[in-house]
Image (tube, rainbow, N blue to C red):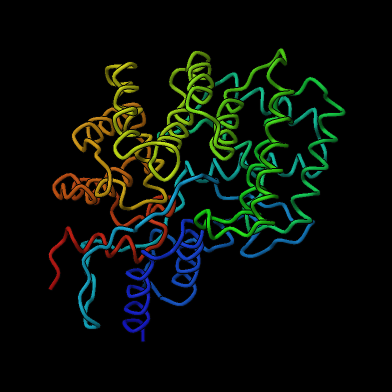
Length: 410
């Protein structure tokens, strides 16, 4: 029975190439939860975590009173998942260690920060929210992937696209109330723009332009314009926030602002915080051919940006932007003109800075396999010892399928 279920899921994986970004993301989430629920992994240590432990609210709890810690939203275009080697229904993956999902300290801390922000927001503790945001903004603490702890704070104030309209409107109303109480708050305005941005994509969906209903397109444009107005109000505030420029670029990307205007925002952003990865990732999205660039343009632009920063810091930036894309696009190396040598070098530098980062080891293994660098992939698979970081692999069985390309199967 297990083999039949696994084969059906692997067949579905091959068919997933036809899905849109949003559909593919939801498909992966559904498969992950199905695997956790229905397949006994026969693992004792490390402990397999449950969906309730991944989302502090438990799965599918979306009523208006629920605090939701969302997934990070992005504007990635269509994706094509990488397909690891699989065989027929008699195929059985044998790895040299027990395999089970593992909640890393990084994931635990990110979820904790998001949950804290969400709880404070629900209780309308605006002063404490201001203090918490100021703490992470001033510390500039970040993770191996380059994301600031401040990002996790803002994630706790937003919803995923599948949340209800009533949840979004309630969130927007409370954010506007926060602005009334703290009229000089950059944090509340950035959070409001972020929510409006995601709410816009909820209306539009992730289909091609000709597939979007007129009503959905109208709501999308209206909500993005509202976000732009909120950000215009925030521009001259005394307090600054690096996330402000990310939101400004994301909204500009959606509204299709000119290249000259986008470049001006980007240059202002990197003048403020030159190594903030979100700026370079959002610029790369803008320059992808699915959006406003030409084939090969974003890769060349990213290389120039990394060269400008120079040294290990430049290599780290290059690797981190690719890491962000790979979260939703397993074809990132195959379908784009990127330098695996530089990515690999960047990850070596990342791991020097974050030697205890399990996510960095897992992502290095993942990308190495996508680059067909099996010696490097095996090195970091060996270091993971069967502990599956779901922020990288998304499911235990996907980790095992990738592992089957490294370890000889009988």
